[in-house]
Image (cartoon, rainbow, N blue to C red; front, side, top):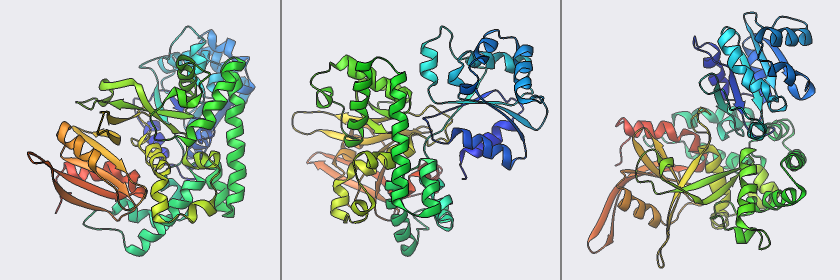
Length: 461
């Protein structure tokens, strides 16, 4: 299956300043498959070693003797690993943590060697060691679930060009819009886990997808035993079941359990976050750039790894999702917020560590909350997510008033448009801004649309 991150790998491999690449992401998001497909499509020899199966190599890596390390790996593979047109792939690198430290010396002493490593629980491996990651000597690719565009490539590729060229002046035809909305609803249940997408592409059976999703979720829960004590295991299981049902809600520890203290629950959430099973969306005051310099770490909401897994955990099936009318779909706003959020986390092709923030103003009478806030270049852009075709913009109005932004984004079920909004908040206060409205399925094109606006090519009526 085609992954957009293959473009990243191609640029990395052909860079004259190539460093060892570490692919980070949750289990089963397709890290290993990505490397194998890249090597095959580019006719590269893949020298793959699964380090979970060769734990004895950790002692070899600990020597930091590059010549000895290469000799041991060549003995294991039965061929040289530093030939041209080849990639050395160290999979499950968290199993031998000293290999992370050795990457620095492989880079310094064998700069011509193409090295890719992948791991799902790197942060846990590092926490048990005294050394840190070799900063400046490696680079990262952060991989999440398959995006909606990648899903279309596999399921209904002719629809994709409509997304990549769509803008308010050249909207998507109504018939295509309807088809895309249907595919989007499918994605809400199938999600972006590669195995689930592959099974659906082959059989178009949601029952088979459900079996795959259950197996994936069982794998994550099996991993919990690696994170700590029995009490920590029970806490992680509680949160694993709690988060999918409360996506988009401000985290309140008392809602999770009245028997656990906040410090222990916070520690468990950090563990799940390290494993990329959940992602905190932090409240930022959004007073300037960078947005993350202005966050309130104690105020946050949580996203689950994948919307398909989220709905599986909540017990939703295709009959439930497909039968929702527009009004009911509005009430399923958490589904839309998860869908948008998991795409925004990896909006930069995985070059930056996935993180996201939102804006919250709490008052006795009128609270205001903007679902997400991102930055693009010099611009701060607030984003509202509406599961249906309508919804109030009161929170966006408050954000525009207090943060003086010119552009806001709304995702809903309507066709794409941009309009100038002029609104009177009270007798003495008014605001004006450009509102870009786009269907939920266009979230992957948000960066392109904002850049068109920044360049003056996208203007309101």
